[in-house]
Length: 321
Image (cartoon, rainbow, N blue to C red; front, side, top):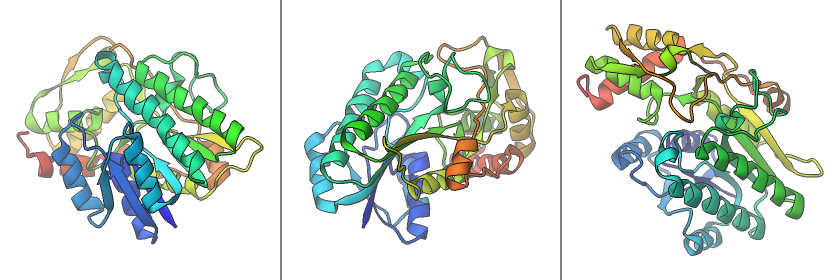
């Protein structure tokens, strides 16, 4: 039985392919290797983490190409991680988010429905909670006030998956990721931005004057949650569920920077800025539902997870990057 992973060259996708291969799964991946960030990083990531992976170059909006791929490999399960990411970028390039996150997602739903896929696991985001939720964020809280178009597309994905589950019995599980970090991460996210800046002696832009908290979650804990959800498909009358995957431990942004500086062995130069449009002040995951459903138990504090990130940035980008 073949398992299809979309976004397989992405940060979470490559680690997921690595974990699936380690347990003997037959995996086929796809990725469009776009230039949202340097495609060389994506190819280097794949070469390091999952060098034997069968990853096809394909875009989510290519309906005919996707259909041909499904007909060729006949996946029985799909882990859908491909999407246009980034909150701030969605303020500048909204059409990319509609094409990838909306059109691309309905293409996947249709193929899963018509090709008899037994379980679709897809990536959502903690961004869906927006202004309407109160920490700790629980899956029962409202998600109807997103702060960015990116977040709105993720809310829409959850509604679309629920509709397909209700209408066609497609078993689907949505996973709301909370600020994922680790070696080989995305260079547009705070962990790598901060680590590279500290290593190079450049100042860090700290938004909202530093008064922010994030539920930073190590990629190994996220992958464990993905596999746990994959192995426990929903069985309810409407077979669609949504889970938080976070660390359940919000960290002050100042503390996060302090741990990076300690790992880098040099002080952080900080430039305080006002709040950015689309950002959230605080995130915190209530993970009780995931723990009850498949034993999800994040185990990596930033004090253990960040030093390898700093070391990887030093080695990959160079100390003066």
